[in-house]
Length: 180
Image (cartoon, rainbow, N blue to C red; front, side, top):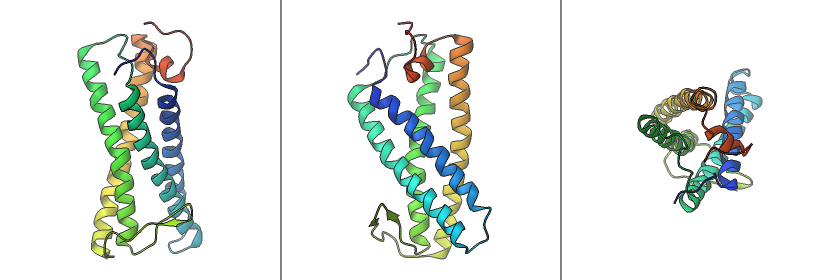
């Protein structure tokens, strides 16, 4: 299903996920400021984990909204750019869903409880230090890929806005009239 504008829920969830990703990255970067084993370091990891779980849930809702309401067609459709944009969105969505799963596995392989607003996740895997290290590496790689892809995504949006002069960014910000 296509529409002339992004659905307001799509816009809200796009920017919510953006803010949650920033918060998750800040929390995990702050972790390095504290000594290993300290309460502050563990708190940063826990906060990072909560943001990761929120990202996962927001992405599930975002994909449901996208399925229900669709997305607008490009107003300046260049086939190569349309294919690249679809590939970029697929990769971003996949990473934003898969990375939290590996974060949960990391905590579980470490034998730590995962709390989410007063609830405790059931233990899905048996604690295993080797698997914890392996899963941690995958989670960090996915996080670094997110840095990279989010940067490309932002640059592409700015390029389309200022160079191509289409209304993709305006439609995601709900500002001004669209070109369609």
